[in-house]
Length: 136
Image 1 (cartoon, helix red, strand yellow):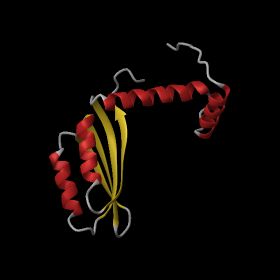
Image 2: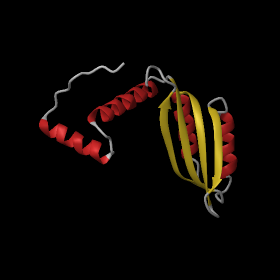
Image 3: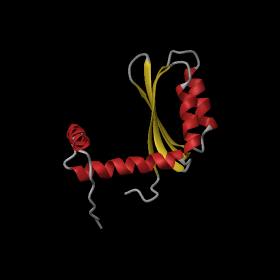
Image 4: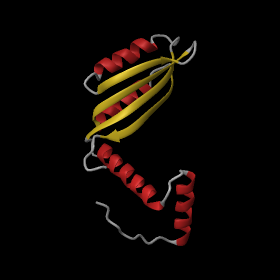
């Protein structure tokens, strides 16, 4: 059931917010506010080291000495947090690895940091989400 509430903002802040929602292609302020609240609640779950989900993406040079062995070793060390992974050959030199993870936020961050810091990893990103906890 939807509940209505009002928000008072300074004119300049509202102008900036309207630019933001237009740039993000929201259809109205309510959708943008709902999305911002959901993101804040996901961040709160991560900050409280609760059970979370996420996606780690890595781009790496597979010619780099032992990078694939080190990636595999790290993933085996965190096998309880890994739900699934996919490996894609981007071109002759580069690979993309997508790893779906679930577990305590601290463990997921630790895995992400370990993978990110490996020599040969060119780009890494953790997209944070959560398993629910009242977020709809």
